[in-house]
Length: 102
Image (cartoon, rainbow, N blue to C red; front, side):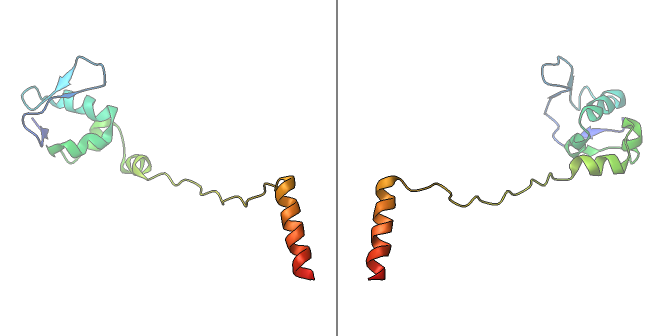
């Protein structure tokens, strides 16, 4: 057996809703490979695994790096307040500016 989970007493489901589970008691190389093929980031759950685990699941380091890169969201500039004042407010603004000019 080449694979071993970090937490000895934990049982993980292969997929949500799947009856198939994986644990150290039930561990086989084939089961671990299937578990990692679903989500390669699950390698963090293992304390022991072969060096060529990427080859075993049919991936390369480049594909793993692409998957784990954080998504950078575009920051939209804040819009300037463009709402026009109501008629009452507009009269007050106009009145103030006329009083300032006197």
